[in-house]
Image (cartoon, rainbow, N blue to C red):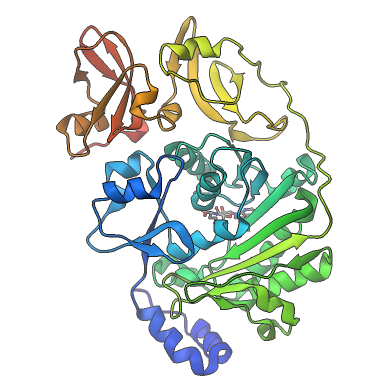
Length: 454
Ligand code: SAM
């Protein structure tokens, strides 16, 4: 393992004083592995009955669990089916503190690969709207894939600079999350790359960038709305320091009183010479809590709601009133939302979705299918919102069935049923589509998701 940067250790020693030896020992200790049950697909109790691994609850997240060696849940078919998201346990606290309500409009400004956006979606139970934004295109694609895997129905994925979103959505959101790009000191135990890239100049440049992204939030959040800022680093410059400078510049924001659980600690105003209010921020230390290093600040914008939400526009697509007809031979109850077509692709956007005109939308909503002349092909994303009983035809396998491995490799399967679209599921959870033609199920799992064995 790469050595820890000496300058970082010296800084931490001067900040932590007597506590430093415990911190130092914590950095050499075990890192925690976690998964968060995707309650969009199943309840926690149902998952605990299915789980092949022993799990222990995470104190600050009722859907989060620790798993232990030799468990590899990231390689299990339940992961492919989106029953959970592999997430660092401390990171599970962030969406819990934003606590969106079903029906609200929520913006995740720096969302890839999607740990917190998928958590927000689960907390909202499919009601309301999430704009999950990621500035880097490649990462925005991974974000879209994760939203699909977890069967999120009410999210739009954009690939924009925060500044452009601020122009497009003036004071439109009830809640905003900024999980900021940071120097990653909190990940030193897990990630040798973060150790290699560290320098005090990088810490300073991260702090400048964090503040400049944060400064777009007052234009995005409605009065009375809630903002959560988080990082996975220890440096006061990127944490209490950024929040203090933000509060000085925007006095209409204040830090909320928060409850600390599971070994969380308050922020440290004295480290940045700031006001006592900064002690309302939250620090997760690896020697105190069962997770990696994290910082969270929960802020509220003063005032009451005066929503000025942009209305829906149809400028880039035309709603297809008859899409239900296409779906009626495939699923018993078509999913909720407003159907919109982009080229031949049909999407469902949340009922109250805003116009996306002029924005780069990687995923304008839930992809439900493709119209090809008079044929309709259901989208892979749709399969992850369904259980076997939701489909007109389905074929279900247990997780160790050889047919399931064949399906995941992209092979065809024999089947006696009538011709039509079949939802292929594992333990009842939709995984993908196959089309039955004369006794053979033709595999429609997207090529990029097929598993090849050497
Ligand atoms: N919230 C994500 C999750 O839970 O999966 C992790 C986000 S990661 C800590 C920070 C993200 O900020 C990265 O995906 C990075 O590409 C993005 N980013 C980098 N520079 C940015 C900028 N100037 N504005 C907005 N986002 C930026």
